Length: 412
Image 1 (cartoon, rainbow, N blue to C red):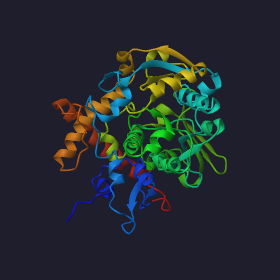
Image 2: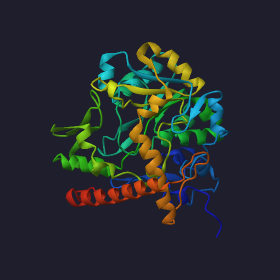
Image 3: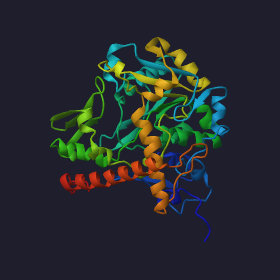
Image 4: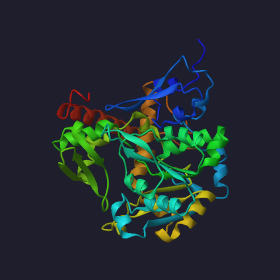
C-alpha cells in the first residue's frame, strides 16, 4: 500500500499535539476535530474530501522539529544569542504589568495581558488569537478571536487544558488584518510550519506570543478537580485556573452560583498532572523557542510574595518592536540567562531529564518518537530511571482518579 500523506498517520502514531494547525491549512476542508472529556481533541479526516495534497503534514509539528543551529526557523533570530532549553534571545527581562489591577488579575504579573491590550490600543494589531473556555462545554478550552482589550481581559490567565487554538488560522487566511497569536510551544511550532508555505500567514500574523509550558492537561483533569470539589462538572458555568494574585488558584462556578476555590499548590496535584496528553511527555520545547516573545512564571524565591512576575524573552526583531511599543505598560528588570534557566528548574527537569527517559520508554515499547535534531536527548541511566518512575506514577494516579472520581455517565 502507498504511504498515507495526511495527519491521520500522526494521530495513529500517538504524535498529535492537538494544536489544530492541520484544520486551518487544509485547502479542501477535509479535516475536523472531535472533542471528548477523556482526551481532548482528535483529528477526523473525510477521505472523500481529502486530495492527498500533504499540506496538513507539512504544517504538523507532531513528528518533531529541527533544532539545529542552521534550522530554517532560526533565520528570524539571526545574530541572537542562544543556549539549550532557553532558546534564542535578544533581550531577557523579569517583568510585570505597570497597572496594579492588571498585575493582580493576571496569572503571573499580567505581562501577556499588558502586551496584548497595548498592541490593540496602539493600533499595531487588529485582533488577538487567544484561549478561552467554551460556554456550551464548561470543560472545553477553545480558541477566541479578541478584537478589543475587554475581550483579551476575558481570556487572561493560564488554561491547564488542551486547546486547538491554531484552527483560528483559518480566520487569518480568510479575513484580512494584523493578528497576534498567543499559544503554547506546540501552537507556535505549528504556526511557523504553516507560515513556511503560506505568504498570507507570514504577512498577517504580525506577532506570536508564546506561553511557557511544562505540561498541559486533558479535559479530564478539570473534571477530576470539579469532582474533588464536590461539584457536578456538567453544571459548571465557568472555570479559571490561575489568579488573581500569584500563584492564585482554581475557581469553579456553577450555573446556580455555587463557587469553589482551591489554591494552586493544592489543586494541581498528582491526579491532575497525570492527565497529560502522551505527546506532551516527549516535547522538549518548554519556553516557546519559535515565538517572537515568550513569557511564563518566574519561580525565584526573591519574587515570592509579590502579585506575580514573569520571565520575558524577546527573541526576534518583531518581538523587540512590540516590546518597545508597549514598554510604558510594563515594569522590567534585566535578567541573565543562567538565572532565567534557574527560574525554570522544575520545568527543565521535566523537559530534559524526564523527557529523555520517556523518549527511551517509547522507543523500547516500539512506539514512534518525535525527532528533534540538534538537541541531545540521549538518556543516561538517571534519565531512564526518572522516566520510568514518571511513567509509573502517571499510570498509578490515572487509575486512582478513575477509581475515586469516575466520570458522570453523561460525560463519559
